[in-house]
Length: 552
Image 1 (cartoon, one colour):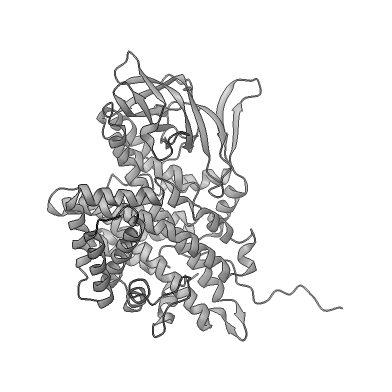
Image 2 (cartoon, helix red, strand yellow; image 1 turned 90 degrees about the horizontal axis):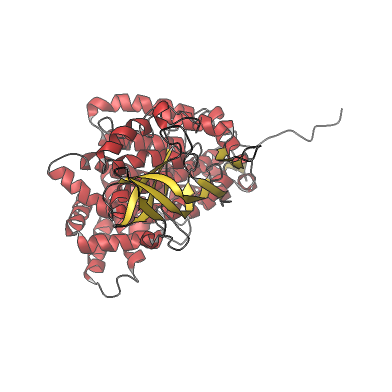
């Protein structure tokens, strides 16, 4: 018998059947750190159960299938009737069912709700990121709807339900749960939503309008309800647009096409038209549309940070897992000094993003309360959120590319999860305001909200004296803030430095010494190259990599 040529050796097994939550010390420790002790054990058990599902082969197969079979638009039925529906692969619905059942659209009904929900969103997003978009918007619509108590009373229970009830065959009042979408962007405006031209004409009913216009990006068009911006007689206003009207007929919501996107392919992003008969209800006052919908934008911005942190964590998990099983030149890759430097460098980036994400989530919980600490956290978020959105979402692209390289050719083929991670990585930097929008928002906060700067500096100052490199970097931020000449041109440099100092402060206070020392030496001390894998000598790289390695 001739020898076999198909014996497979030196290949890493799939990273499956592990607990995505418990195998991530930065996440598990962060949740426990920010949560009241009497609720920590319940939250840990809940998140570990979700983590085991997220790490299962079945869930990862759903993620693959949802992307291999993207949604399909059906504008008309076989008889020529306009239906404007989107068909999804069954795997998409399985992902949505688990996300909704895990409470990822419900951060508002229990103590530590934002922290628990953010941690769950971080865990479940590592399965598949596309369906996270409608999950995020359903969660984020609630604070905006609270500007109109009647609408909030009607829709909040539906959007925060733990039951995924898909379909446009009945009004939301007859369903066990609902999903929300959003439409702000128009062709002529982009990020400048005040340039929107969609018109809202008042009807005879109180708070009722008819819309006429075109939305260039409308995400998740199969949702039950949407928050949109349109020009009312009193100016730009926020409106609620249901897909199915209370009498069971379909609203005039014309899906023109689905976008053919770089990544996020499981999720339907669309162009839609309102034909002048599209029925809508006003949310908040006329002319206060941006102020109303900004509550939704703030919540989705936190999800952008969370989603990018989750993507980076999954990329690091895949890279460390692969290198722990693959050998070259007589050693496992993870034992090779240069590879260890690359892995440790990526692990630092990931842990810094995770730690910052959880601090923001905890601040959201605190900010919903009363008193001095609540006010301080509201001020802190005004500056910290756009700072984190700017920086963390930008780090996903280089990290995903480097992690893919750790897998070599195995990471470049579509059977690997790495191409999907790489294609997904630019999205969160674009969604809810690109980098320039975030940097300019930071400048606005600095100019208009001095209490925000005080809260930000107070947060950083909690680590004062713990690391000389952090102290020097903080002093540098002070110097940049004191020099307002050409500040808009320098906004990106300033915001990047602010983000790094904030991350450094959190890691010095909460992370193991090996992690905080390496972060401060490289990101704040200047002993770092332009690519991952350029950490200076003398650091405990083995401890950093061991902490990042998922235990399957």
